[in-house]
Image (cartoon, rainbow, N blue to C red; front, side):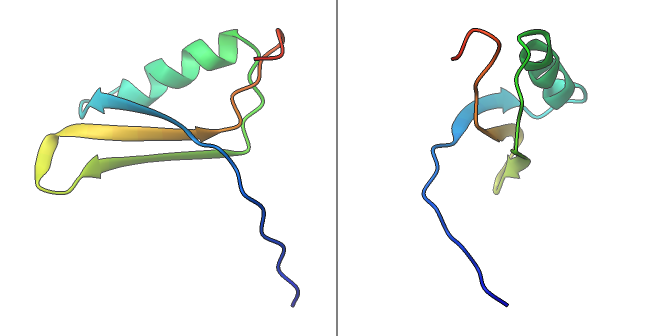
Length: 64
């Protein structure tokens, strides 16, 4: 099986690790018309109060 790799830029936001943090972030991007190919969310090891959300690409109807 052939695999193709390409370099991408991830957009990353640090958030409080609480219910709804990912949904709130994605709602804003959905309103902007973002077409996402990758979404990752995870809690920081050792700090259960903080989390990160990473996205690719962040391009909306306005082209940014």
